[in-house]
Structures are given as C-alpha cells and as structure tokens.
Amino acid sequence: DTGVPQITTEAGHTLDVGFGLACHSFSAVQAVPGCISGCLWSCGNICALYVVEALGQGIGYSLTQASVVISGLWGIFYYRELRGRAAWCWALGCSVCLLGCALLAAERAPSISQT
Image 1 (cartoon, rainbow, N blue to C red):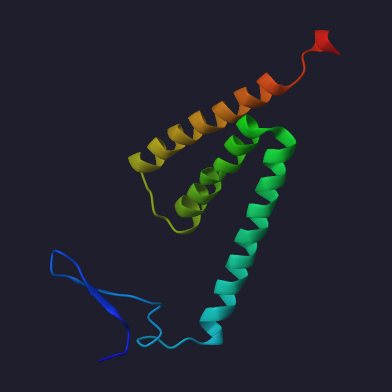
Image 2 (spheres, rainbow, N blue to C red; image 1 turned 120 degrees about the vertical axis):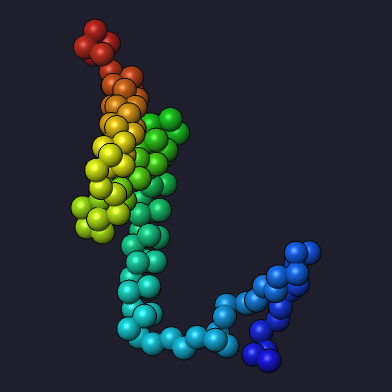
C-alpha cells in the first residue's frame, strides 16, 4: 500500500487520487525547468489579459488564441512532429487563422475618411 487514496470506477479500473508523490521522487533537475515554464506561462497569460483589455474581446482574444501558430511551428521545425502532407494541411489551417486575425485587425483599423 502506497498510502495514496484510490477510487474504483464503475468499469472496475482503479484511479490514484493525489499528486502521486508516493511513487515519484523529484529533483532540482526536474523542478527548475518546470518552474521556469510555469512562470513564462503566467507572464504570457497576464499579457494576454492586457491585450484583450486594450484591443477588445473580438480582436484581443483572437490574437491570443493564435498562439497555436507558434506552438505548431515549434512542433514542426524543432520536434519534427509533422512531415509531408500533414505539415501542409497544418500550414493551410495556419493561413486561415492568420487571415482571420488580419481581417479582424483591418476591421478595427480606422479608415482614411474617418480621420
């Protein structure tokens, strides 16, 4: 018995409840990158709140959700997760996403006759 509470589901599977501390040991080698990535995520989330406040819900939220483009680029070029046709399909979806962001920005921009 590990001392971790368990729940038995209707299907008969057992789920461990808790953080799994009884099974794993942690070290600074694991904790430091995890803390750094968590702090970076928090900073990005705070900046996203400011963007939505400054640009409005429609444009600000759309731009913050376009972060999938950056994560996709990491996946394709650094981790080599997609190749061939799958990468081209992703690029097509990325283009649609970026086109939508550009159209939203153009809609918000003041026209020359209004200035």
